[in-house]
Image 1 (tube, rainbow, N blue to C red):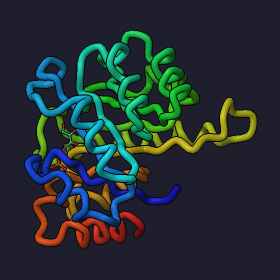
Image 2 (spheres, rainbow, N blue to C red):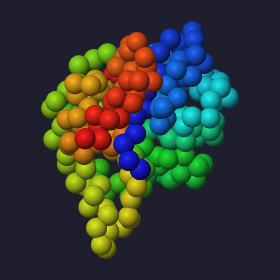
Image 3 (cartoon, helix red, strand yellow):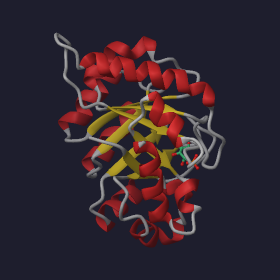
Length: 224
Ligand SMILES: O=C(CO)[C@@H](O)[C@H](O)COP(=O)(O)O
């Protein structure tokens, strides 16, 4: 997989989701933020809305669970037809079991880390995962400022992923390295240079006059 741009529906108009989804045909996936007002101080949407979005589009659905007890709730999103389901490592009780369950249900399994969570303690989990999501803002809200302090972690994660592709490694991986928070024309090149290949953008895309042109612009910037 090359560079992927995934607009975050959190910054879209929830009263007109169908129209908003159709405004970004160039998107590689639609990123859906599920927040429970416990793991993060915000409440967004849950399974019934994801089920409706599934019916409304064939686009890949990339679910980001910012919730407590993902072990209990995450599998239902895979069962609902989401191609990718990401849980926070800070909230997961049994991440290996959960990742295996998501994969057995046909979804890609993603692991997200908040800005203060180091990747090092979780390096051994990588072969069980299809995506690592490095949050570049504190999770909970769109429209926040990108945290440059996360760039070294992106680089270290890229090194760990690439090491899995070396001879003798446990797995030759297609593990995506996703960045979420404050991604814009000002910040995306820095993230790509650090090794990210998958970019979530909310306010940058849905705040643009022409959302789909912004998707293309972000993709071009990340490719250079
Ligand atoms: O998970 C989150 C926020 O917690 C994101 O997916 C936001 O939706 C990103 O929004 P922008 O920072 O791109 O405006």
